[in-house]
Length: 487
Image (cartoon, rainbow, N blue to C red; front, side):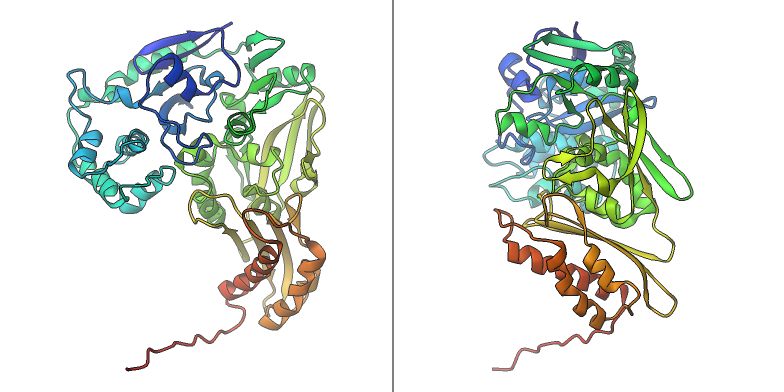
């Protein structure tokens, strides 16, 4: 069987390849499209950035992705666009490329193709991007020698340059690409390879359940923002690999009066608008998860299913009392998300099950909901710890309800029951919070690693509770200003 996709302006059909082959390796080694570079092989630096277009709900959407951790097997019925496709046939540079030249946005040039692709994606979607929008588009692109100011100026300059639509390859080809991609879509399950190296692309959620019933040790690949590193960094041999990023049944977002139901295949980017409207603090957290390329690939369902103790979304979801729905050949079952995490590397997912969706309750109108991520870099970094709080106070300022959850403090994302008990029914004051801080020692025994020491994590966790108090205005604070003494 074969997978089919479009690479720049040509259709590709592939029936023999390793399921763990990355898109970057395919581009560079087989197609000799060497504009995309390998800088980190883990989705951090953005030198490998390309666009992947896909049909979703009747629209053709192009998104930046990290080709170093995107697997070729996940590309069925997509349009891959590399930097080589931007210039005109006569060699004239695209406005984004020309602006990078004019504004001196490149020095050594290694990172430049990836930056160009990120700015090109922004150029397509936003006629007049703000500086904040430009910075967000570049979150996933690192440049070690130029400095970002000329790159930002290049983005501003390019946004003012809009030649005839016929110049831009994607604009010119959009209708024909949509037709081709629609023809490539299939409800049949595609299997490539043999017993020693097999990629499986299920045609539906029901077919996925059938596949997992047969292959109990299969690795499910959604966004591959984590699984990609298992291959590129840990050199793990994964077989079979089951790809689900195309399953529209898992990409639904349903909003009710009290909750948001997010399909397991919904990416961070897709979830952002609904969460920004209903739960702004959650949306602000998403803005700090990886770069734009990672958010375009990674899924909230995958972040949960993976069970990492430093995953950013589980604490935020547990504090909201989210529930998880799992599916298998035997049907579906729902559990509280906090009960899904059993131990380090162990989750309550039975053989043959996969995550179907997450039900996220909206905070009560009088609730204070906050998520705090602590990391060495503000943008595009893994958390040292992440704390989430959902607090409800009575009219007289007493703690009526509080749910507290942390990631990075234990072998799993975990509630803080002793801290919660120390706060419940007490006045929401600095005295109450100060008295509750020692209870953290009963809830967590953090470890020391490259991101933080155990002592730092414990102190930071306690301080985040104090920060919540300050931000909710529960206790008046005196700010002291220190004036410089005259010489």
